[in-house]
Image (cartoon, rainbow, N blue to C red):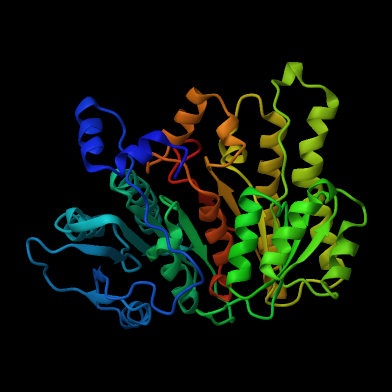
Length: 441
């Protein structure tokens, strides 16, 4: 059971009706998948398309879905809507958004999915086309806010020139229950050659997760192991006992190590037998204080752990050739790095720095066939957030489109997707896993 009282109450029909009567937020419990990926994550679910596009039709059929363009019966409900906006070039053509969504949007099931496809404005050949493409962003983010009260999500995939062959992975992720806490986001997709794998996509891969003992790190290690990876679990020596138990349960390898150690990259390579296919830089700390009351030690510690060590380890792994072609690097930022947070100038600076690393490395590593992306979690239900004063905790939960906090597994699902061959077309993305949090939106 969640620590969110309103979410727990909203699971009960009578309590939910009472909450609606008195004006209390009644979060919709989200549907989440468990266990490893399935061949057919949308088995027998109806997905409505706006256009007869053969590759989209085929992709949906491969997910087990029932794609259709037909008119629906009055009482028929659908799991998802996919709108291909790649042909919209004029401002007048935006009317097609209304014509498609207006009669269908109220037919979405609870926890339904909407995905739009577009082309990046920066590749437009005219001002009008650029404006038309950018309009999709505002439309998607607004629709995500409307769908949130029923647990629904809306997201946009921007396909760069010749990126069509990389669409299936992101589309499958965003339409499935694995993306339950991803809403209002824009994913940028580039051309790549790596083909997706749907079952055990990480088999025979060596994955390192830092900060693996608890919370998001633990959930990530579990998910990577479920998808076939051999996981190296790294955390500070004080967590050795926890690491040992977790590693044993996952048939992984514990690595008690301070990530700020100058020899951290060398030790990681030794334990990984010289090759690290996947590394997830999750280790992070906070040392909150307003800037005027913050001493130098409090300032420096989060920057060292959260940012400098990430840069240093990544650089040294790359210099040693330890990350091969097809390798995946996933950094963990935060919405604090996007929007800022009072009392967290040090932490926000470190997480904003992670975004800078993501954008630079994403472009720089493209030619090497290495994908580097980041996730930016919003409010997540962990033992640390449960210690936050109740008023702040409640505000954090209700500030998202979905009216609730996420779970560590939500972040782990996004990381697992970014670590998979299906994300080969994603370079330098900062994927917010925040339920559409209003901060920095």
